[in-house]
Length: 98
Image 1 (cartoon, rainbow, N blue to C red):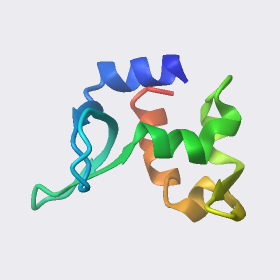
Image 2 (image 1 turned 180 degrees about the horizontal axis):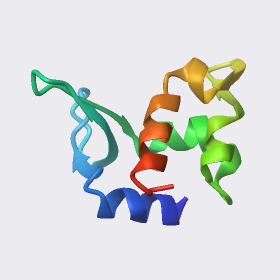
Image 3 (image 1 turned 180 degrees about the vertical axis):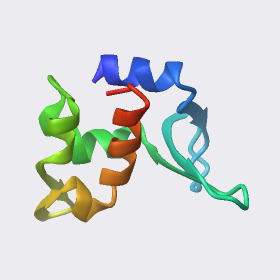
Image 4 (image 1 turned 90 degrees about the vertical axis):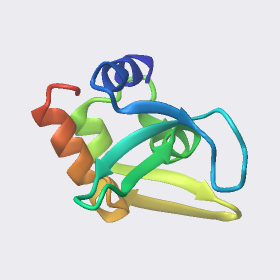
């Protein structure tokens, strides 16, 4: 994932910030900014939990596929589209990030 994070950083899509719980110095991936200025992001830890199965080769095809992850005691298998991330991966591909 390091190459992906490096490419996202070069594109200005990586930032440090505090969580809504007051935890500091979390690293986030900026997903989008709405017309009203609201930003949507995901912290790197959550991103890695969801897409860690492609850590060695986070290509567009791999990220767009099906992923198995565990939340609490429940295991899920979902596609990037089902999780709501596919549109961001499509944008990253068009921008040459992935």
